[in-house]
Length: 152
Image 1 (cartoon, rainbow, N blue to C red):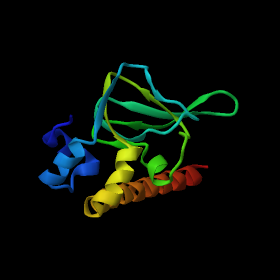
Image 2 (cartoon, rainbow, N blue to C red):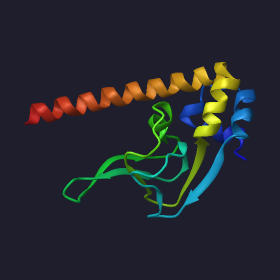
Image 3 (cartoon, helix red, strand yellow):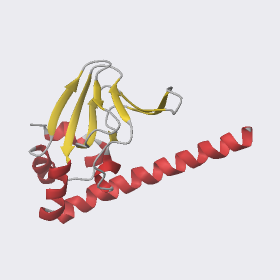
Image 4 (cartoon, helix red, strand yellow):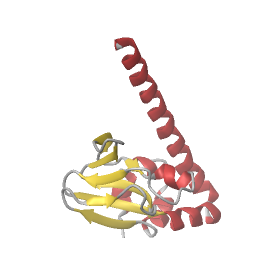
């Protein structure tokens, strides 16, 4: 079981109270991956929201001509897989690979959905954080697109 102080470091849970963290700690699974190990592959069944406790994870896709394209590198206290849960996707749209020895917290889809029903107030805080992160990512992508267009 995850410990409350470690979970409080996770961006997804920074707004939660100690009581809420204690409840979440009982729902979280801890997984460990060695350098180069696959966490999931595109097309595999989704598992939930992954939170990086320690290490680095590369999110990538294969291009139609067979090249690997890195989409993001996720580091400590960041999350990935949240959109699969939010959008109710059944399969992953990209690959996730540990770039170094990596420990993850996994908030499984089943536990996430159960929390939606059992504790809407806590879920509201989590969803608000996911929305802020998504907004930040959209702004970042917009900035990159504008720079790319200007340099073209």
